[in-house]
Length: 255
Image (cartoon, rainbow, N blue to C red; front, side, top):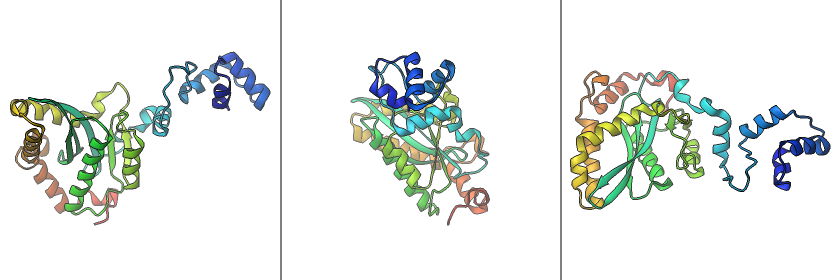
């Protein structure tokens, strides 16, 4: 009702919206509640500058912190939550954009992609590589796995969210202004840039940089020991989890 009133009467403020609700719909709403509803539903009265929100943006705006499933779930094993983020990688020809999907608990990178543009194609490609990697490891489905990221336009796009949901995954988002929600990704990017920065910077072409990224990911997954993983590599730790089937009981994966 409120949305229709605003669309038909772009000059109305709160007082006139209240009158229209009462006279046209028989709904009596006080000033304080009306203001709260406008904020909850993202219906700004500054309509000339308002950007149209996607359906997922509206849902996330309403859910606020409740959209962060990582804070509610007990992530105590691999294959329960996969986190994703994008960072910039400088090289000789400019800047490339690097996206990863890695295991929240086991720290293993399942999917990654490098692009000259931080767009939806970038994150969808990384997501699809993650699905293929999980399938090669023995999972027939990603159903029940949490996919956590920030609320940026790329990660809330219809193409990305629909693909995750149609694959059986759960969407989870960091609260605005709380980067610590995705600390696993931040730590991964920090290590990668610190250890490989000079080699990345010396790459003359995008293709050369992509080969270095591939080499860095292989090293990170297969060779680099992590103190948080009992001094094992992500691949070794993940394989041990698979052998003991520690994740099967709680997420009911189909093998």
